Image (cartoon, rainbow over all chains, first blue to last red; front, side, top):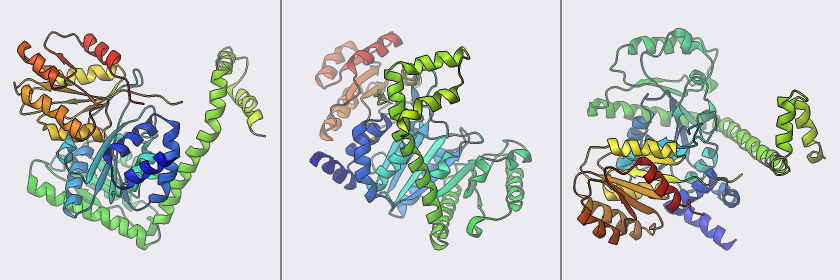
Length: 322
Length: 134
């Protein structure tokens, strides 16, 4: 107990080793980590959480790296969670987002942690919500969460962040792509990255047309479109990243001033309670079913078409729902 | 439902841009079911150690083809010790002359793999020597 208190204290003081170990324990579903996160929870809620999403190779890590620099110049402390995919075959993963951000490794006010999806489908890792709490309790002013390279519907990031940045590159498709539901709807800001390439104008027109069709924007925030060009032209690139950082801050102020932050927090809370409920309810049931061998018998019945999964699930959960 | 997974950092210290070997190894560790953090080239020992601690890895694999391993490898171990993180195992590989092995082992490098070492032998070594920390 005393030890646990020390752990929370160490994290609040910004101890990297303790924090990174706790995140590891959360990823690995260590039971003691859950009890620590309960103690950490009251110390969270101060950070501005920014989600960065977009297709593979769109430039999310490079932009995140540039944003770290921008925030550090303002004297803000930064935490980054970078998610990359886990192999569905071996369970292994290459976590390579860090390559773009290693120049900040020695800055004590920047904490970068890579996470593998470990089978989660929404473009994040299951541990991301709790890992955000850990960085928040460490006192980071800004927390950036970089999703895996996303396709069309990995929208989980919207449940974890105050501000969602969707990074696009020219040449990805026609106007129907821009009309589709999913990732194009969750942006608070659009970045057209690599905007020195062909097709930038077209993409910008498509985005504007798509936004023009929106019936309304919550609190009147129309997602701005920021063009970021050639990373190798340092002056232009830095200027444009500066503009992006400014717009991100403006969005946060917009949420606060229009009492919209509460809506985002409720959205996040709903996901958290959902996950916690499912852990409380599902895990004991599954554990019993696995240990008694009943799960295998159920699978046999389904495969042989003797019984449907819905009836089996209802039957199996009855004793728990008294 | 808890499950420990081995986390490994593959790093290229120093002024050495030849990372095909490091990439092959990273891929091979991935296929062995490990989570691999690759740092890219031109890393200082300080960057590698800071990264390894932030990532809570069980092992750091250093690849060096430039000849500077006699300074770079021991420096990584030394910095880990200073940061009270010497429970992280360090192994090395690359163009390492035989006569340097003893010096590196003495400095705390746990194993050295040179050209010709099979990928399987490296994965097997990791599996038998690296236990994810409790």
